[in-house]
Amino acid sequence: GDGANAAVFLSMLKFAKSTLKSALKSSGGEQSGVAANLILEIESVAPLATPTKAQELLQGSYTVLTQDHWGVGLALEINEGNWESAGPSAIRFQGAAYNITYLDQDMLILRGVTQGEKAMANVLSKTG
Image 1 (cartoon, rainbow, N blue to C red):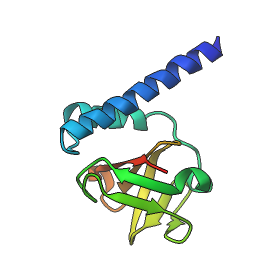
Image 2: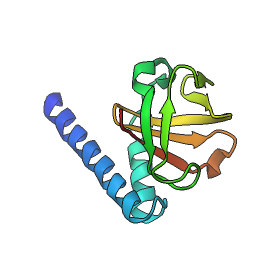
Image 3: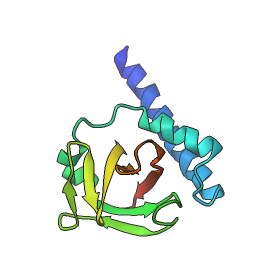
Image 4: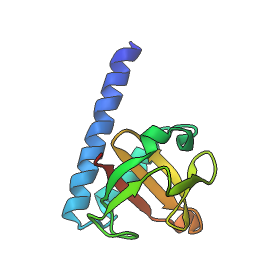
């Protein structure tokens, strides 16, 4: 039934996320090949309709896993005082606007709004 399907789906998602983490680790945070495909795969999972409303999910401590924007391993803190909503699934953070393309209790993916189609994914792993 649906319960079994949901369980399979969640374990596949969990596997995709852990595979993505190790792919990014071994590529030094570079989004190519397997990592790039996994990011798209994870983003294709229907994200929350309005992630900016899920503040307790969004806020917290993160480690950056990709290298394009902030640098691998950088610790980022998203808290009440340092971000604002830029739409139902976009935030303004550190002076820039980002689309939230994926959010759950342990991963956040942001893409810069101004870069349009060329926007690289910023994959952040929740640490607290």
